[in-house]
Amino acid sequence: MKVFIETYGCTFNQADSEIMAGILAKEGMELVDDVVDADAIIVNTCYVKLPTESKVINRIKGLQEAYPDKQVIVGGCMVEVDPEKLERIGPNCSWIGPHHLNKVADVVKSACGGEVSRVTGFSKDSKVCVPKIRKDPYIHVIQICEGCLGSCSYCCTRFARGGLNSYPIADIKAEAQKAIEDGCVEIELTAQDTAAFGHDSGEKLSDLIKEVAGLDGDFRVRIGMMHPNNIGDDLDDLIDAVNMPNVYKFLHVPIQSGSDAVLKHMRRHHTVQEYKDIVYRFKNEIPGLTLATDIIVGYPTETEEDFEQTVELVEEVKFNIIHISKYQHREGAISSSLKDIPFEVMKRRSKRLSDVKFKLLEDENKILQDSEMNALVVEKGPKGGFIAKSDSYIPIIVHDVELGSFIKVHIDETTGTYLIGHEV
Image 1: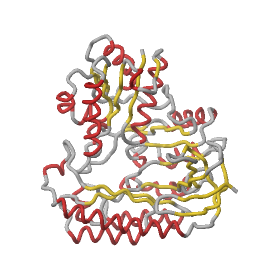
Image 2: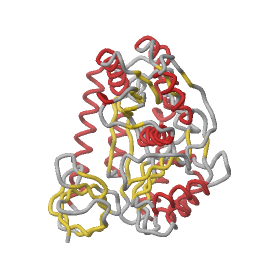
Image 3: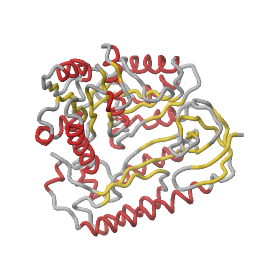
Image 4: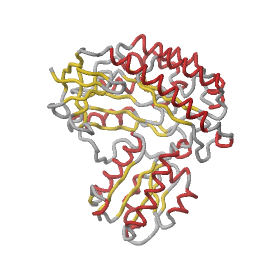
């Protein structure tokens, strides 16, 4: 049996696909790189934003029309968040829920045998120390926990991933050790919210980072997104952990809005000042830190004053990476019952914040012109050359280097999103 896996969405979803690939290979199935060669097609869906939803729906429809002789199996968040819509667009599709990846081979076999098979629902099965086939031989992604502690009003992902389920530090460390022995040079610790790790098991994110970063070998550790509300009393130890030599000086701490009123409506459970207290500790005590954040523009209750407070926060904190999203209703989300603000207002606010963002990032990166920095070559560039990541996780375009190598780079040119340099 030949299987093609197509993945949408976040690093966590990509890791789910790596697990499915590992399990299928262990069961003797062949993973193929072209949908044309496949007997079964797994579409691992993302449902976090409306454009992605539209993309996966069109893809599922298109695959059924283009390849009526192939079995289409749908996985990922759509299976749990919007099964009614999935039933309408793919009544003959089989499903594999994100909590039951260990049954993916059974679903594929049943589908190829002419039976519509659907395995959904929640479980506490671990996603650590299970078979995986890496998409990138140099980068190993480890899911440290699944689910979250949040109740954000705009989010539908929590309906797919459920409550928090943290995996043991000992198991995560063992998987990281094996990956390093296999030649991986980057270990990514990922979750819906890494800061929630251990709140259900009594362990701590800072201890996990220290255990993984303390392993022997030449590698870097990248920490995934953390909700500021769940950092709690781990802040001091997290600063110590991120300051370890082989941990990227990179943190992704979403704020979503610079207005306390909007944060309250969003059910984020923190204030702007509480957020600033955390990120300024990070910025002041982690030299060279790259700080990333997320902002939703046009939440239904956002006023002009609320938006201006967001702009002021961005200009004050001087984030290094800013992900801007226009608000859109999501299936099942509490905020979906609210009336949208006018599209033209949302468009204007998004454009304004984007202009502020790019000016800020250009100015910040210009400071790095003609500097030299250590970097790890992690992937091929989409337009040639290679992408190396500095110790602060800043992408640098370089040429004539080897994948997986640690290099010193001279920065020749800067942009608002990346640097360009050469090995010295």
